[in-house]
Length: 236
Image (cartoon, rainbow, N blue to C red; front, side):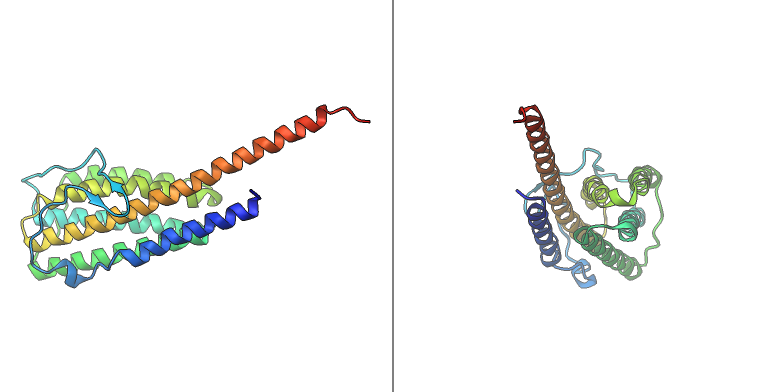
């Protein structure tokens, strides 16, 4: 396959993945997040494919208060927005830029819902000791993203989104079981569904680009083999 045709197909597939992100997330509005109806903690989230939590999932921690949980949620949203900002400052692919913009917008909306809920419940977020452990892990991911040359940020961002999505999903699932207020349980369930969808789409894009890299390497190997064969062929 010619490189131009392959890249056109790659862009089309990636664009479809981004379009499905925008169409399927269904909003994260304040009204949806604060219905006052308790939901069961999410055991697994599926969105267009199997999504499992990171092995570091937070199990139910009785000593975490709702104030602690709101603080952790704010830290997660902040890190995802910061990672998207890195991509938006150094993007090369329109497709990945669109993904970063959508991700930043979604997490800003989630944080707005969290802030509104905190005000409604008269809760002031308070960071628990667990916050330093979590933010340290996400900061490592963000630091590694900042260390890439601009030309490599697009794919590094996709890899970061897969890693951060797994980590965040695991925490959200655990925190949902620790929340006391039904409204906060509902918000965390909505956030887990949203992050599960983001993770599925990031994995899909990662597979698309990995496949394109493999095809490019195969094409290069065939071209090298053809050149070698021509050089061995005796001249007349």
